[in-house]
Image (cartoon, rainbow, N blue to C red; front, side):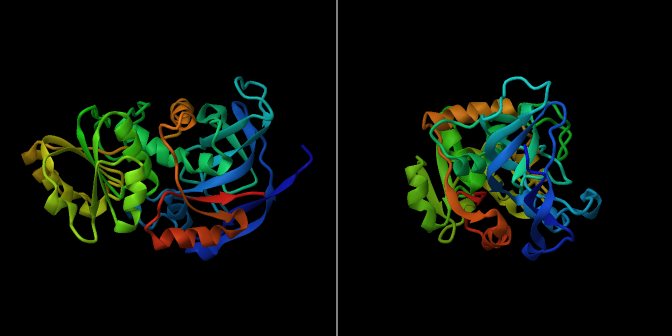
Length: 337
């Protein structure tokens, strides 16, 4: 490879989207167990702006140290440019996608023209979808998969003492809050694939989109609060979580489960115990074999990933501004020519 420098987005100081700087930086080299990817597209995810602003949304004692400057991002799709000598299963020229080194609170360096990634965290890009759609899938898809289908690892849970355990979905009723977003729109499809009756919560602008994805019921939260109109569901996946997630306890049947994707701030443990409701969360982790399973669903059109908007890598600031406005329908993706 002749290129010694590349373009990347780097953060030199914490702050808003304006701190994202498009600049030259050295091309990384693959270490043992890694491949070098020439990146075609990068998925934009909440941890990217958590890192950008110095993790201010976390409690102070949870904020990890970050060495600046740092390249944010974790989700990539591209072409293998080089392979470490000990790597098997990938070759130069392969189309791949993956979630790189997550969780890695110092940045996984995906907002760049080249990324060095552990081979174990990658999968072949599914045939029939382009790099933009493949880059949109890893974090959102793995989050939905690890919450609903299979955790896939035995690492300690940072949010609770117990291991997160997905519940069987066949024949169950599942409410997904934030159903049109990145995690949500993939979660409703995985739940349907597993035989669940799915209730989607989103604003009215997303109803047709979610109906097309196969949801059985739709609730426009701008007209009706779901906790006021739903009772007796087996599982709630709250893709927003936070302090308001406790309101979904009243929608669940005794013995049901509440899975908040962002569990910090939940204060209804006593109420949940009285109702016999399991409240559980986990931290999504990179997993190449699970991505391969997801990839087969994409390839056979069992699940599809939606794109809210695309921006050039140089316009990462605009992408983060779009994310801040909210009400996404699918994922935001950065593209590299």
